[in-house]
Length: 158
Image 1 (cartoon, one colour):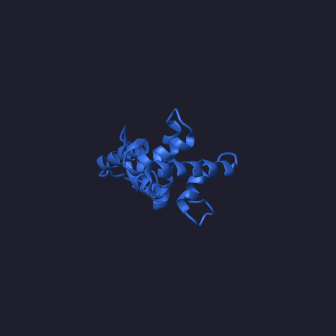
Image 2 (cartoon, helix red, strand yellow):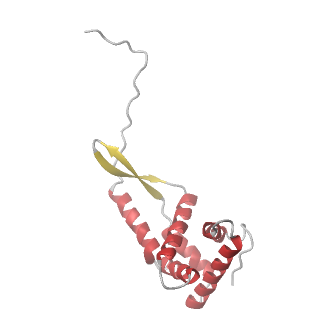
Image 3 (tube, one colour):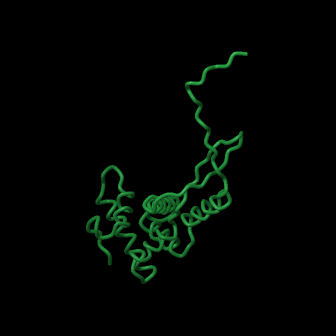
């Protein structure tokens, strides 16, 4: 089973544990992550690190959607983001989807969400697909920048 030792052992596990941590309770975040790794191992009989890597890869998005008001209408404009921001956004979606699940412990919900995301299912993957669809439909929208006015122009008299 995978152990969480430090930042260099696995950067994705470090990012997940940092995102799980609230009010500085790192041991609690590590314990939740360890339990979810054990649950992944028991359910899939595979390496939990590979499941987590695949889940993060499936939920990572390379674009973000910005809304702009142009000529009285609000348009969604896609723009590229870095890989690190995409990974952190995917992790955030997985954790928020696990929090929204009900009925079980959070560690079990997190394990189930990782398994679903690795199989290209679940709420986090669905959210990525929705944003990808919006970005694809609006990829040709361009922003026209306003030309700056020259300050030293004299006003014309009529």
